[in-house]
Image (cartoon, rainbow, N blue to C red; front, side, top):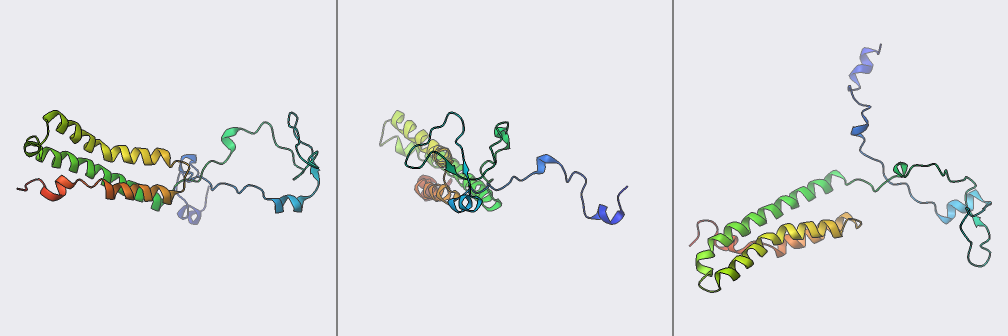
Amino acid sequence: MSDRRDDALSWDGDDDPTLDAGRAPVAPPTADDDAEVGGAVELPEGFQAVGKGAATVAGPTTAVDASADAGDAPGAAPLGNVALITLGVLGGVYLLWTLGWIVGGLRLQGTAEFLVAPVAYQVALWLAVLAPPLWFATVFVLTRGAKTWLRVVWLLAGVVLLVPWPFVMIGTVGQ
């Protein structure tokens, strides 16, 4: 049985593996690391050395465990709290922009149909409504392997470019 003082410092379920926040990726070995270990390692079977003096490769003397599971390899570092909150706030802004285009576009429908054909107006309206979620999804997919700051910059650019001007200028009860 555990001591009462030890119980005060732990929670039931602390060892739950689903609460693991992940590990930062391990830095790949550098040339300096290889020089410190010394020695030469034969290439694995099926590989051929290329270049002058490449019959052996300088490196650590430990062999790679062939039975290592691919799931054991460390993945990409998880997003930090600030990045997650930033992406959530920007996702909310994009949702508001979508709603702004719906409300503002429907508000202008009666006036704009005098200027363009009703079919053309409907197509333009729904393209405008779909632009914010498409921009968000496109940036999210295309910047998967990129740095987080680059994703945030592209999302902020979309926030500026996709402002729902009909809603901003007229609102829901405008003239």
